[in-house]
Image 1 (tube, rainbow, N blue to C red):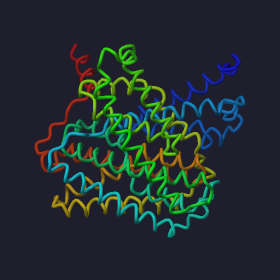
Image 2 (image 1 turned 90 degrees about the horizontal axis):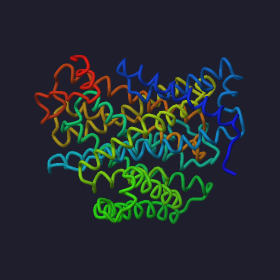
Image 3 (image 1 turned 135 degrees about the vertical axis):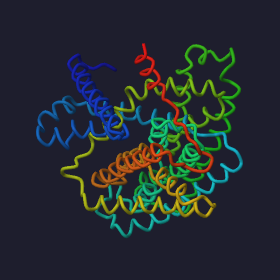
Length: 441
């Protein structure tokens, strides 16, 4: 009932192993030349997918990834698990401790980087003529929401990785950017949940549909924060919690899966449940426990599931047949300028200096993992077609590259990121410490 033949298992393990190895190899090489690892991982799918292998050796591609009827579903399962774990890890990076001044700056940036960018993106959907990019759901309203989100979204995982690689995770600048990304992404996931809800209902849209969808999303957020906080705060580290005692990681994964399942059943999007599970865990648990949880989840997620997720995104792209470079360039310039200008103006309005405002604009413009999640969810639900899917994925990748390059220049030159980060001394990463110790032995 639940079994595969020996040949099918062997074939799938070969294909998955090759994809995983290529993802790690290209991710490693990307980091060596100061490019975010996620770009290399998606490139693995491009190399082994329709873009390169499938273009030059189509039979080899079909044999590798479409070798038996259920192989696509197996990759689809790993893809979904990687997506859930990516969102869970993103939630665990959420910042919760701020002084009054930083809270004001974060609030202003959330409003200033989300609302104007979303509104501009909404009206831009008409300028760009979205009709050729409609997916199978054939819902213009849903695709307008997705385009607006693509302009305003920010990546917690990638920008956190950039900060960690540069040794500036401890700075005031990093805490504000990560908090801003987390809060406004929650709001944008609500919008995405609404888009997928109306797309699943065909072209039917009423005020009641909007109120119901948004109401359910906010009720789910409030309920998760209230009950989840209580669960993690009071019921986790007690001797009666046998599941936690039997497996700390298993306990938290169980909570994540349950919240993701509940979110999916409420048509909120399962990934939203995983994100909230991570945020609540970060808020409610003692610092030592949440850091250990993040480390344990990251070990398994970033070694297997998440690289497979990003590589599978690349497998779905065919940049030879379904990619318009000129349209991408115009979309990229529009999205980047809109988000950067919105943040810059907001930052100047709250009396930050021009250089700080520019740094914030560049950092918050990083779309990374969430941008790819947005495109893959919109594509899988039929909101967008493969052409726009490719555009949004490439937008996420390129806007992940720019902040890493710019912030590396700022840190290497010894320039100030923002007030409060004077005389910055980058922290050494754990893996760099290990290399240093081994070097001196």
